[in-house]
Amino acid sequence: MITVITPQHQFEYAGAAVNVFHANKGEGLPRHQHEYSHATLCTAGSCIVRKENVEKILSLASGPVNLRENEWHEIEALEDGAVFINIFAKGK
Image (cartoon, rainbow, N blue to C red; front, top):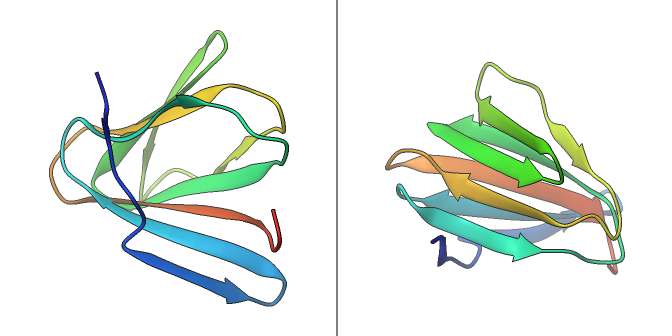
């Protein structure tokens, strides 16, 4: 079970909204979906992104993953000190 966290930082830049999450193992965003796409990337530690029939581990070495609109997904930190970022169109 994923413990829900809120963004450590939220800001807008050049038409994009950016949410930065600092998470410890087992924390993140449980299964959800929304009406907009967003990119997710991990900049410290590692996280797992789960969506229908797919699990992908993200780390600093991996690239971002695109999560499509209306597609259920969840993001979970796999270790303490993980940082992941969600980027989406401003106003969503």
